[in-house]
Image (cartoon, rainbow over all chains, first blue to last red; front, top):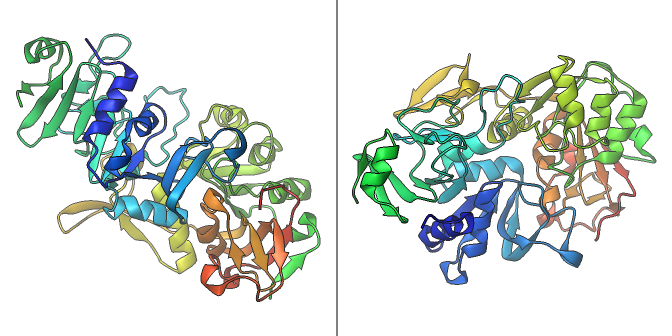
Length: 210
Length: 224
């Protein structure tokens, strides 16, 4: 059985190291937060200047001055800290952030990431903090479907879309498998209802057993 | 000398055509809405606006854009679900966009306020946003040369000011405020209240008054 989107999020959460400082991207990666266990003692960073971000706010807890990177109202946990925008990105580029989780249009076998622009001439370009996270976080985890809507693989030999970062992705979590991008190649660390041979038949990228 | 302005129109007086204006805020948090509205009423044109985004809905920065007062936007993320004013102007070729990765945007503003002439950052190496930029290898890693952003005016929203112009922010409303306040010739702070000098804990001051010229209290309701 392939994994649902929540099951992928849970699988990512399971792999986050204890005590890590983690940034979760907008969209699906935000769901990872719901599956982090208190004993993991993970501290969530949001690039709009906060460490110790809590769950989404509701009802009386909603405060217009307390939002996440997706502008959704959130809460603060004991031990939270606020800082300014330049310090927030110093935490990324300076190597202080342990893990970031982002979505992607494509990831290459050497860890190139494309997740900010589709090259559609009518699309308005927008990059946000993705390039800073890509080069800054010590580990970059990507969460995505393994195939685009038209069936083409998104784990590729080389990205066609404009890059966000070069050689920056460490792991790719999909509904079919978890891939570790290592110096020796793309390792299938875990597969869900499929086999390495079946995956290899659908991907151009050479796959290795763990 | 700090000027505590009696109203927002007094707080924006003198801002001229062609000015570069740093505007704080990330989403609605820390957005100096009253100052943006006052700037629209004042009416300077050919402005360059620096903000993380390019306006939402039809109010605030989006209204300034819709009024045709902005020639260029420098930001990291213009495209949002409700950025229809910017989208229309951009597609019609009526507004210029300089797209900057968010951390590079913040650091360029910080550098502007700190008197730094440029810096090398790994962000953007190997991407389309590296086009035309000097690449330098330092200790085996590639970096891009980026230049500071300085402005004529900064609008920031803080929580409390004192009579010296010292500022304290509130939660994620802080965002670009401290770095923008330092990077402009004229910094105007929109605050929830002004307390007598001496009432703010000096250890808790986030933006020292040296970076602030004008303060104005607005009635934007925020829980204390």
